[in-house]
Length: 502
Image (cartoon, rainbow, N blue to C red; front, side, top):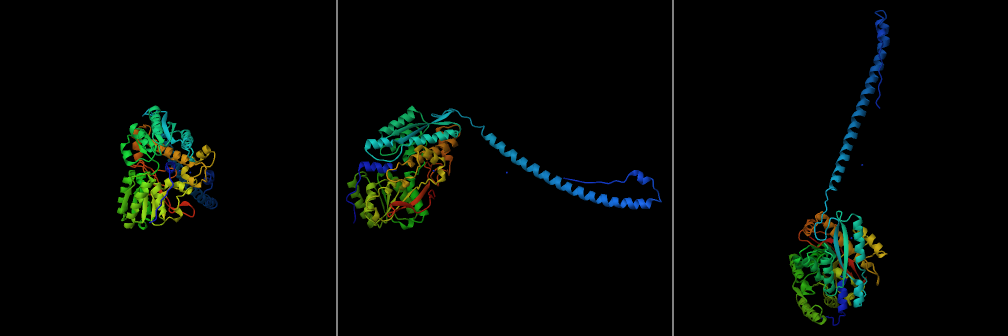
């Protein structure tokens, strides 16, 4: 049995890994004079008749009939029908409909944080500069605030939301523990009385503070990764632009099925890096077995954070996996120790990672021994500046950053990551604008929730597929099957973006 006896990870590394979590008529006539006809009688009649009647009949009747009737019928009837009927129908109906619609919006002071003139919006974002300073880190993320401010300014220049201006208030926090996140929540909800918060809290000890918005203060939130139980407690809408952790497990299974990989990877071992993922594991087990797959082992790590205890637990677990003929180890959650342990076993097991977006840092610092590992599959998004769905976001972001904003995979060394700020700002603000517009002029918590439930397939920057609807609170449906390429030391896409809802 192969096993790793030493894995280099500290609290600071764990924090770093977690955080690395777009329209002529003519005629003639000749007549014989009356005086000429009466004077000659019988002796002259022959000459007069011959000379006068024959030419008159020949010259007058034939041309009159030919030149008058035919042109009149052709030039009068056809043009009259064509030029009168068609233009009248086209120019009258369309303008009348458009003009009527724009005169029906009446804005009022409809709810807390919503007046006839404005909507108060909060932004909660990590203070990356402060985090690096206080904890000796070297994270390359740019702070989000300037990008949100620029996009809000653009929204207001376009007329705001149904005529209401958006006022943005920003509060930053340090994502280590709940202290600064709690303070930011109180300031945005109690002091600023915002209608909605964008982005939300993230990081160790801070993610759970999002309930300060949605539950305690009944304030809408666009962002974060709410668990099912958090949504049940929410007193206001909590809607994520990204796919939720709970639905991502099922989405991954759908992705493997749609791409033809599912039958080749079993039997499966489902592993949760901490007990919070038990429900995800249960849902994945049911879904796999419904597809005819064998899932002989399901386990959660009760000693997350303890490297020695985690490795001891994994050693026992892998012996059971061997006895059950397991082929694929499915990692759910950001478990550094377990991932490195399985990689250390070489090609004994396939490694399937539930959330590939959480391990983007592998391109800069792959886990040790990965060059000898077996098949590593995950799912992720591959953002690109060539994606037209980003629209004006990239143009605005480039102006803010004073450089070309590029996806993380295109960055080298310690180049500043502006992409995270741009994408978060663009997606969360676009989602809020979409829902608030659908809610209509009477903007309240109730109309906002009803509007979100009324939306089906939507267009969201950066994602090929996205949707909302009754009971669906996370928009992203798009995943791409991804394999680790050891030679290139990078993840490669092995499928197109797939709609994982079916």
